Amino acid sequence: GTSLRGFRNKLAEVVDTSAYSPARIENIYRTNVQSAFSRGQAEIHKHPILSDVFPYAKYTAVRDSRTRPTHAAMMHLGLDGTAYYRASDYAVWDIWTPPAGFSCRCSRRFVTRHEAARNGVAEAREWVQTGQKPPLQSRVWYLPPRDKGFVGPGAQALSLNGNHGTNCCGEMRLSQYEWNRQLKEIISGGLLV
Image 1: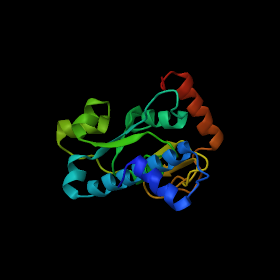
Image 2: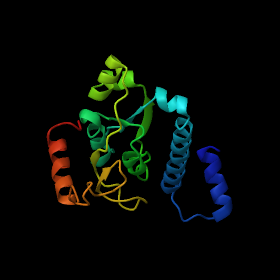
Image 3: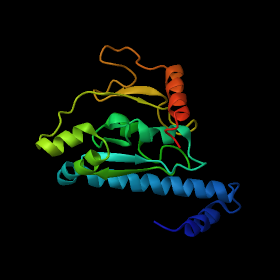
Image 4: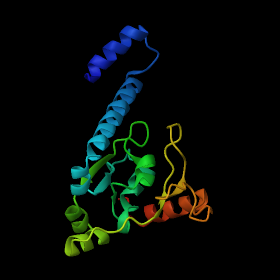
């Protein structure tokens, strides 16, 4: 890799007089660096020892005036209303692995069952108490749409059995209208403050 300055210089050499603004160049650079970091992190997590020690992942949004409401909402849509999801919930991470849009500053951090338990995940708390790993059950997630203009599917209900946008019977579980209504409830309920 290289620094942002090195990236800009290399781009200027290739494009000579670039039509891209400095802000756009920075956006491209930061999004690609974060994408590469995220892919590397996920690849390392595939090791059986690491995936056993860190079975959960926490989604974190920056939570300032520039944070998109859908990104902030992901901090309340995980297990038991937390920001914690199973690290193996590909239905979630295939859509929402940061960066989840251009200039996304969100992050994903793999965590132990003990951290998830301390932060309100009931199945993790039971796992810590009993030593019994919870069964991987098919679960339907209601997730917000990704950002327009960013490559990836739109709003859909996702299930671990791979039937994106449907339940086990093939029915659509959540319309865009219903998602927007629920998101407004979350926002108006003060959860995103």
